[in-house]
Length: 113
Image (cartoon, rainbow, N blue to C red; front, side):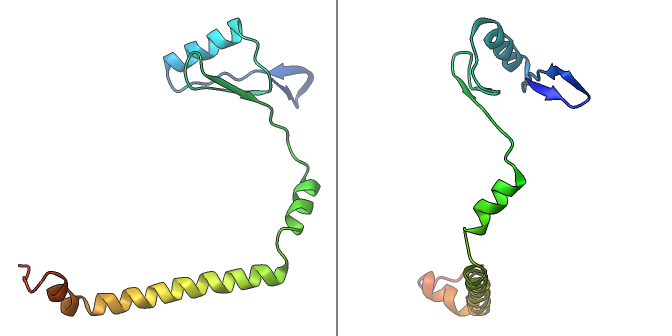
């Protein structure tokens, strides 16, 4: 259940399922089990995983990401990624251009029709 912004003294409970069987599992779990957390995933009527989700503050996320990579590391990784893509494109173009010469050697001299 989550607090709704338009009515601070009220809460909203959402029960979703992909079909009638999943909705029955969810309703049975609500009535017969004590579910911990604010999210429950049901994989069957008896296999239920529960956990709590909390919203992270933007400042906390930014602080965690700032220390992940320096600008220099990000620049080097970008250059390496684009270089690998470029080399792959060149190799693919060369192989495509030589496909007529390579196929007879690969197939043992047997020509395809």
